[in-house]
Image (cartoon, rainbow, N blue to C red; front, side, top):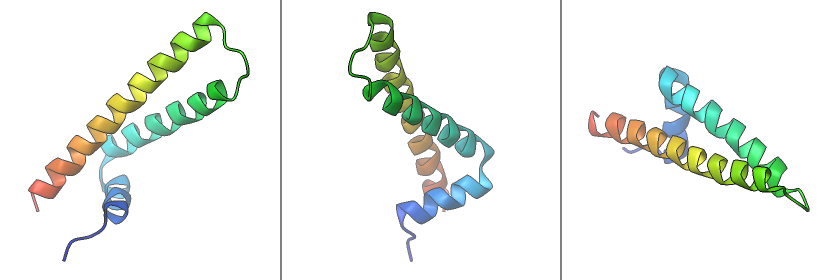
Length: 75
């Protein structure tokens, strides 16, 4: 029986320190992006920061997915 992705992520949050660290960083990026995106006007520096945060968030998500794939293939 296969567990859902949400259950699997929760299990990895408990068992894998690297996954937990990546998820925490992803959450911080998400919070910072929400704050930047809520601004009515962004300076050029803030626009650049937003673009870089989006790239970092995506890279973190890719790393988390790779860990999930590694665990799933070893089961």
